[in-house]
Length: 212
Image 1 (tube, rainbow, N blue to C red):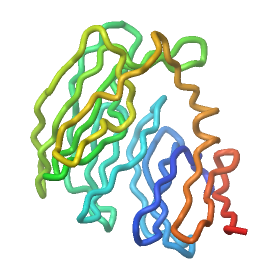
Image 2 (cartoon, helix red, strand yellow):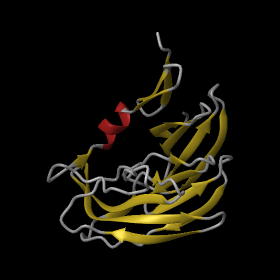
Image 3 (cartoon, rainbow, N blue to C red):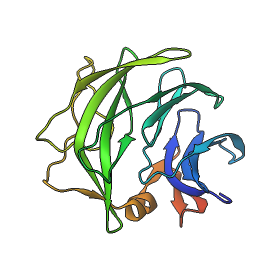
């Protein structure tokens, strides 16, 4: 992967691999063709503590959260629009982050925006969280705050959506939950339709294992 550190993987229906990465004072995503050649790369100045997965809609548009901003990219990697969430944290040392998005049947993008606080190398998340519904457009987006539960810790996982379009909050089942970026990033694997397994090794190398 060169100078970047791979953090998250996503596979689309055409076999392209999306790698969310951390660069030098930057973060972004690279799209690889099935033969591992680079198709495009998106990168912005950032220093995030958390890296969500990209979401892909039925048109192939991609939605990626970096810190407190949700980016919409075309299938060619061109920025369609970006949406900054001015989330108010309850703690002085926290930062707001956009989680992994989910997409409703009508195309609405559902995201959790939550404060993240670093404590002794661990990332504490889930406090002061809100669910937002984003109405996508070709060049801009509008959002509406759906709810901010005060007594429930909400994870940054994609909000589950039923076939009828009902959105559920991805709440934690324990009182205190921590995200360990190192442990979480190393463990993620994706599997294609042929059973091949892809994963990032040591943040620097994309590896593939065949189904055998």
